[in-house]
Structures are given as structure tokens and as C-alpha cells.
Length: 346
Image 1 (tube, rainbow, N blue to C red):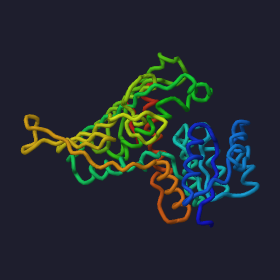
Image 2 (cartoon, rainbow, N blue to C red):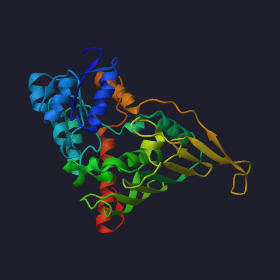
Image 3 (cartoon, one colour):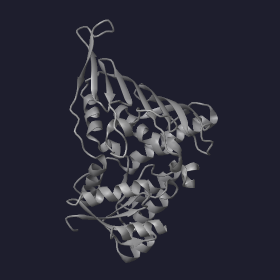
Image 4 (cartoon, rainbow, N blue to C red):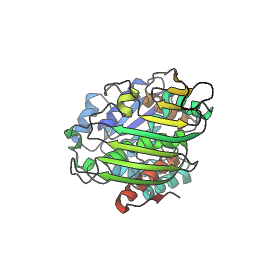
């Protein structure tokens, strides 16, 4: 293998082009070797940046096998494309969600395991140093035993975002496309989720998918959580605006996660730990300690991890199994909305 891993990217929509930028910038780790996209726009885009183009993964694999493939196609074909890579014994990083159903995701996870092919899922926020530091603070007991957590995911998407029909259909929508990131981080920071109770609404846009949702979460550890989500609210309280990890979004000084424990509370991503003085109860003064925030693009850290996994030097930070677990929580939220019942995860 060349010292730089040859990476192909399947799908060059919004997130696919972000991956193109990251791969082309990380020249010490990887090189972009091909773009796979059946559309004329994808063909023209590949031509404009001087990269080989193929309409399908099959067409590419008939010509050559890259060291790894990033699948950034529509959610509905993630499993199909992932299985093509597994069949070609090619390591694959599948954008989140890993699939639109846990049954299909399980099929991909099982195939990758049976064929000993590395399968990663693009929950890139785990790679952010902000999240790594938050996890370390919790693990070292900085806020004591965690008892509650809240996530706010409010933002306003432009109308043209929903121009592609697939984004208005089941398998898309902000619960699947956006909240799955937050659910993945809540699992990473607070442990596995035992049950959910959720409601949603689509009254603002009237699409097949929801535009607003709220869920109650019970974790196996006993932690209780809430998540509030909407892509119809003008707000500074979302990971995109509060983390500053993507320059496409205006940065704010706000946080979107609040994690409460018996010895203090932590807001993320501003990494402020609040604690009482002396006896540590509500009548005592309370103050915050701000922790150092290292600025790095988590997509760059993710592609570095992918390259090192391909080389056999690292384990995936987010495996196919982890992507499947987060998807199961999203499915439970969707089922709870339909049944108006609490849904238990097994």
C-alpha cells in the first residue's frame, strides 16, 4: 500500500463534497482516487476537480479497488453500497445513518464481520476534541455521578434543502438525519439507552417526515434525558452553531448539551463545569471552570482514523456496531411517535 491511502467517495451531494474537501486537504494521510456518482452533476464535478469518475461502485471495482471507500449516498442506499464494498473486500466508512432500518444495518454489520472487512460509520462528532474532553471529564468524576442530560437541536433549514425528494420521505427527516448525531453523542457520554418516549409534528412543512420532535430517554445507568429537535426554529442552540466545527455555519458562544451530576454540571461544547463551593448544595456559591478547547475539524480526525484502520494501526472509533446501536434508538423514537407508547430497547 502507498503511504497515502487511496480513497474513493461514493455520492457527491452536500456531505460528499465535504468529504472531498477533507480528503484532498489531508494529503499526508490519503489521496482522492475516484468519485462514484450516477448523476450528470457528479460527473461534471469530478471532471472539474480532475478526479476519475464512475457511475457505480460496480463500474469502479471492475477497473480498480481503492484502499477505502466513503459512502455518502442517500440514506436509502447506504446498505446496498456498503455491501458492494464488503463484497470487494474494501474497507468502508458509511455516512450516518448506517441504514434506514436496523434490520438492514444488521445485514451490513454481519457481512462486514463475516468477511473481516473494516466497517466504520460517520458519526464524526465523536472525533471532535471537545467531545473527547467532555468524555474525559465525566469519566474522571469531575461532575460526580451523572443523573440527567438535555440536548437541544434547534436550527432553521432553508426551503431548498428539501428540494431533493428523498429528504422529504421516510428514511430522511431531522430525527434520522440530525438527531442521530445527538443520540450517538449522548450514548457516548452517558451510556446505553434503555427506553424512549417521543412525540413529533410535521405541521410546519407538512412533509412525510417530521420537522419537530421531543423525546424522553432513560439510560441503563438510571440517567434520565431529554432531547428537543426542530429544523424550523431560528436558534443558536444546536451543535452546528455552538461547536464551530464547520465554517459553513455561523459560530455562537452557546451550548447545546447540559449534563448534570451529583458534584456539578457540564455544558457542552463550551466545556464549562459548574460546581458549588464548600458543602456543595444550592445555597452555596456556584462557579464555573472553563476547559481548554482544541480546534480541529473532526472530519479530518475521522479520515485519519479511517486511514489508520486501513493500515491496521488503529481500531475504528465508531464501528458498524456503534452505528447500529444509535440507529436502534432512532427507530425506537420513531416507533414511540407512531404508537404513543414507551419503547424499550433490547
